[in-house]
Amino acid sequence: MSAFDAIVIGGGANGLVASARLAKGGVRTLLIEAEETLGGQGRAAEFAPGFFATPLGMDPGWLPGSIAKALGIPGLDHVNGNAGVTVAIEPGTFLNLSRDAKQAAQAIAHHSKDDAAKWPDFTKQLHALAGFLEALYQKPAPDVNASSAGELLSMLDLGRAYRGLGRRNMIEFLRTLPLSVWELADDWFECAPLKAAIAATGIRDHQQGPRSGGTGFVLLHHLVGAPAGSIHGRVAHRAGPAAFTKAAEQAARRFGVTIRTGTPVARIQVKAHAVSGVVLANDEEIPARMILSTAGAASTLLDAVDPVWLDPEFLHAVRNIRHRGCTAFVLYALDALPEFRGLEKDALAEPISLTSNIVAMEKAADAAKYGTVSEHPHVELSVPSLLWADQAPAGKHVLVARMQYAPYRLRDRGIWDAARRNALAERVTATIESFAPGFKSRIQHRAAWTPIDLEERFGLREGAPSHGELGLDQILFMRPVPGWGRHATPIDGLYLGGAGSHPGPGLLGLPGWLAAQSVLQVERR
Image (cartoon, rainbow, N blue to C red; front, side, top):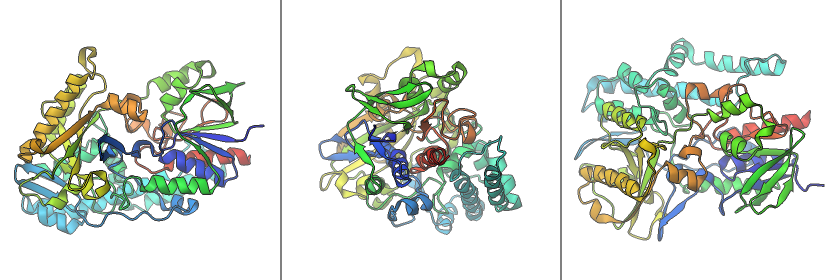
C-alpha cells in the first residue's frame, strides 16, 4: 500500500498551496521539488559571492485573502510608501507615478495639465476592471457547456459581479480586453512618457509589442491584486522575496505534507489510462493514484508522460501552446549605489523604466520578431538591496535590470553563447550608463540571464515565466488548451496546477488552489 494518495510536483507557490489544500482535505500528500530549495520562480540566486537576486520574484504576486485564511497563512506586510513606477524622460529628468493618484497627477501636471486631470479617473477604472478579474480568477474557469445547478449558479455569481462594474465599466471591460495597450493609452493621454509607463505593464513577459491586440488584457492581468493607483503591479513584501514561500511551507507542514527537495521527477507512470505514480531521476518509484503537476502543461505532458496515453489531437494542441520567452535579466553586484541625477535615492527601490515612449518599445519588439535584439532595448531596473539589506554585503548593492526583448530563438539558428550574452549585457549597461554616468565604474560583477538560462535554471519552457503567453486564446477555459481549462487532463488522476493553467501567472498559489479543489471534488464523488 502506498504511503501517499497524491504527489504534487513542484515546490513553488502553486505546489505549496496545492499540497497544503490537499492535505487539509484529508489527502496524504507528498510534495516533490527538483531543486534543493523551495520557492520556484521566487527562489533567490547567489550570482556573485554575497550578492543575491530574485529576478522572477520582483513582483510578489497576489495572494487572495480567502486562500490565506483557509490555510492559516499570516498576513504578509507590504513595503510602506507610494513611490510607484518612475519613467526616465531624459538624463536628469524623470516622471514619478506614485500609487497615490493625487500625487501622481501633480507630477503629471508638469508635462500635461489635461493628462493630470484624467489620471485619477483612469487609475480608478483600471482598478475596477482588474477587480472583476479578481472575482473571475478565484473561481474555476467558466464551463461553456455548464448544465448542473452548481455550475449555473457559479456563472450567475460572476454575472452579478460583472453587472456590479456598472454600465460604463461593463462596456470598458469588454473593449479593453482585445485592445492594444498603445490604443488604450492614446485614448486617454497625450504625454509620451506617461503612455510608455502604462504600456510597460501591458508587454511584460509578452513577445508582442504595445501595438498588438490583447496587450490591454495583459495590463489588467498584472494589476490583479494591485493597490488602487498602481499601474505596474503589486507591492513587495516587507519581509523579503521569500516571505510567502516560508509561510506557505509552514502551512503545508502543519497540515501534514511530506516535502522532498533535490528530487527531480523523470516521468509520470500511467497504467490503464490512469496515473499510478512517478519515477524519480534516481529510478526510485513512488506510487500514488493522483498526480498534481505545477510545472508547465507542455513540460508535464510532453516530457514526463508517454505519448501513447494521449490523443494525437490533444498532443497537437499542447505542442502548439505559445511560450515565446522574451525577457532577459542582467544582475549587477555594485560597490556603491548608482547616481541618477534628478532622482532621489529611495526611488531606486521601486521600478524605473528607461524607455520614454511607446514607439521605442514597439521597435524593440520588432527586432525580436526577426530573432534579433534591438540596439535600444526596453530596460527596467530596481535596487532590491535598498529594501532588503541581506541581498548584498554591507555598503554594497544589487541592481536587477529586466530587459525586453531577448528572443528565445535567434535568427539563423544562432545560440545564446558567451559572446551574445556579453553583447546583451553591454547594451543594458550602456542604457543605464546614459542615465547614471559612472555606473560602469561601480560594477564588481554582472550576470546576464537570457531565456535559455531561465529555462535551465527554473525549468521554464522556452524561458517563459508565464508558462504560456497570456494571449486571448490562452486564457480562462482555453488555458492551457481549449476544453481543458479546469485542471484535469485526459489521463485519470493527472491534474495541472501551475501558472500555465487557469488563471495564469503572478497569482500566488491560485492555480494550485483551484487544481487541488478539483482533485478534492473528484475524491468526494
